[in-house]
Image 1 (cartoon, helix red, strand yellow):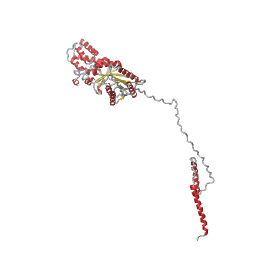
Image 2: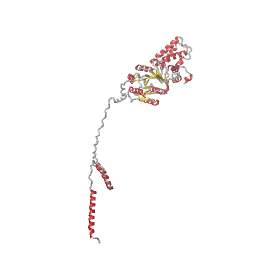
Image 3: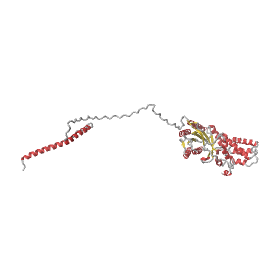
Image 4: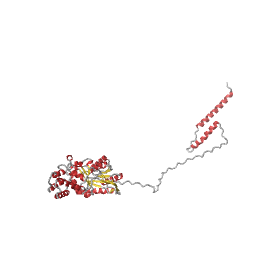
Length: 444
């Protein structure tokens, strides 16, 4: 049985517990005031010492009396972010500024720009292109001219085996020389020598007549040495001639020989009117390993050759071989264009072209004589290249052109191979053409 004194006590305890629970619930549900961004750092800083104080209170550690109270840290104001402004470029002093490099002049399609001419570097000792004396090979190349129906065969039938040489032989010699494309003027020069020898009784047998013919032919053809002499770096060579004379092929063969001798060669595709000529020159360039400078179809040939000379000079090349379009010698505007090309080459390099070679197809006979005269009047030629001598029986054209122009024959073409383009030697050629030679060589 409970006592009456216990009831009020339990009631009071229940009321106190309810009040405490209500206070706790109220404190937990009450929201803290939101802080601004600037106040959050301050609150964090204040919580740190408060937390430390609470820990000390829990441990009941008395704080030292002599410890000074820590002053609150001053409130850190947020620093304003600096405005980013575009950085101004500082002007360099005038004397420190490096001058801008000017681009190299490039010739325009309508023609090369005026520019100070480059100076060719003189070679202390002129380099001669390789010459190998090989009479048998030349004689073989002149097989048609040495046949019975050719120049040599007709002369041999007239002279060989005669015991007595009478003045009547002069008329027969004249017919043979003229039919072999020696030319009227050159024929008269040779016959005058024969008449003089006959009148002095010096040409009394066939051997003496043969000797007189060879001597006179050699004298006519000794206008200068064959091959190229590289006196400058680069030595600029301009090739001219009519259509189909063999200019591009001659350039390819000559480039092959020069490259084999250790020279650096640049090819200029100046025949801009015939696309096949440019392609042909590119084939030679790839085969030999030479740089080919070309322009667009129909471009100004003078501009192309101008650029080639500039590149050759800057790259240290030894030789520039410049091709041109074939043209009839009777077409005045086309001949005037060649004059322009030659003038432009002089603007690209002082003294260029150093060689202007006329390429002649030997199979054209007397027409080659007319071509030679017209080109010689239009341009200051320095030499002749006679191509396709292996394809004609009239080998006397070499003597006629040499006497007509008084120019050295630089090269003769005796076949399709690069080695068949041979530097000309007057005595060697005359011996191959008019010399009797061994029987096995004749059969070849």
